[in-house]
Length: 316
Ligand SMILES: Nc1ncnc2c1ncn2[C@@H]1O[C@H](COP(=O)(O)OP(=O)(O)OP(=O)(O)O)[C@@H](O)[C@H]1O
Ligand SMILES: [Mg+2]
Image 1 (tube, rainbow, N blue to C red):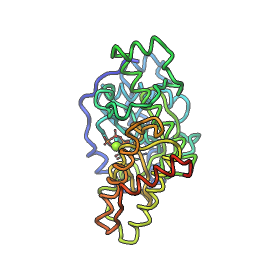
Image 2: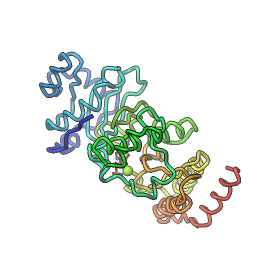
Image 3: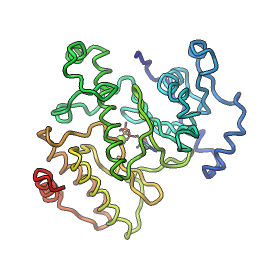
Image 4: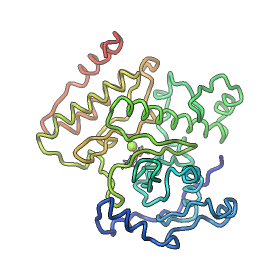
């Protein structure tokens, strides 16, 4: 797959000016919106798709971003998973996240599409400490260590090899979401993934995405139970042989008085990665940093050691 580079983003101000409506009213308004108000795909894409199947979007963006949306989301659109792109939530370092209208068959009104940037592999936290002990995965989640052609492409750092690396990170992220969601964790429900894109449950309203915990002020009686619940997630991940590796209040969403853990591409395999215990301690420390303002403290080192011992003794 060849991807174009990003340029000319519209800013989010157009959404900031929308009236605050609940989801149902927003949905009703969108149904009434005439199709001509939606942005058509670039002409060459529309032609390739015979016009009919092309995704038109309520979100108006520059051409290169529109191409990227088409490439990332058209298959989901054709498969009746989503029906529109409503807003760009955030352009992160590695990925852009969009708020999409879920097709009724997806079971969700709003979906988050996390679309990795074409050059994500350049900035991704893919330094050695995260990669150790990790099997490279292809887009179907199968290990690719035995595929000599892929191994060569990765070793030679060709464009294709780099894409393979990015897909492998996305594969890990999706796998982690599925495992944690099935285990009852507070993570977005995974809906599907393809190429450089993950679709999942969206938290927030269209023009009011859930804030990350670092920008939220909790009431004093919310803090302790929320911290304990987040530590339960740390334990749950370890039970499934993973350490998040980038956990902090910046990777936790706050919605409906609940903390939702996100952003898993760098999760490490605990049994195989020699740095896992150190990363576990750092995750606990960083979470703890946010909660100290509420008088909630933790001895991260002692807790990491205790969890690790229980993990090694299969007592989690
Ligand atoms: N399921 C979701 N529902 C609502 N908003 C989301 C969702 N997933 C991600 N976001 C928003 O998108 C932002 C970026 O997501 P994420 O942390 O997964 O990607 P990232 O590339 O690591 O970004 P960053 O570098 O900012 O951490 C989040 O901080 C959050 O604001
Ligand atoms: Mg993040």
